[in-house]
Amino acid sequence: MAKPRILVAQAIFPETVERLAQHFEVQANQDDVRWSPAELARQLADKDGALTTGAQRIDAALLAACPRLRVVANMAVGYNNFDVAAMTAAGVQGTNTPDVLTDTTADFGFALLMAAARRITEGERYLRAGQWKDWRYDLLAGSEVHGSTLGIIGMGRIGQGIARRAAHGFGMEVLYHNRTRLPPALEAECKARHVGKDVLLANADHVVLVLPYTPDNHHTIGAQELARMKPTATLVNIARGGIVDEAALAAALREGRLAAAGLDVFEGEPAVHPDLLTLPNVVLTPHIASATVATRRAMANLAADNLIAFFDGRGPLTPVNQLPGADEFLYQ
Ligand code: 8YV
Image (cartoon, rainbow, N blue to C red; front, side, top):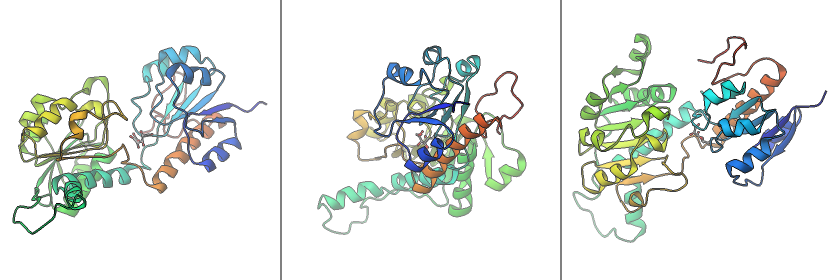
């Protein structure tokens, strides 16, 4: 029987491509060519499956041009690049890579919080520019992290990881806002209290965004929400850029209505709002919260495992949609 044909849409670890090649006929974009949506559809037109990275949009128009496609494995926990309803309607299975990146991403969220609140990158730029001449009582004085109040918006696995670090490692009081409340035992373990969004914004000394990006939460943090935050507060976004109105955030940071921000994700990646680039009180990183070698390897392996399990008939390991007629296997 002919092997299923798989497209690896962006460069990944060569050993993952080799592993996939033991099971499939693989075409891998190891030169990392950035395809337009039309070119992606052309590349996928004769494929049975794909490994994507989050940068490839899988929507109704693409699916209509790819009748053979049965499964798309995203090498990311977020899958806002998938039109899940269109995929389900077309009978296409989607999968993501939860769990394997939880702690690494939570570590990075904390690193961004520390860097922004304690002005670490600002201090480094100052030193490298030869501006450091003397001690001064208020030189680069930031805001306290330990013992302060942290607000977490989005309390999935990564949010819980941040809560544990904050409560257990930094003695912080943790408030969280989420569509659904955590079970009491998990709340107790994370030492986190569920509150409304406005209460969180008004009371938190630092706010971390870790919620999935959906059309409903576009610009969930805009001018109004920023106005509710303390002027001494820090905002960290490791979720998706579209959750924050970047122009409103840049204005708040410029006008001293918000002390600092740490951003790993942006609305128009890889473009960054030009106003943010000019501000000293924002730490900017290029979407690298999950970027350790071990975690990226685990993500690539899980994406490959999903494709292998799907075509073996075992069902996907970490599905994001439930196809009609398929066994009940939706991963929780
Ligand atoms: C990925 C991410 O690196 O997992 C996610 O949702 O945002 C990152 O870990 C990125 O999406 C590229 O795959």
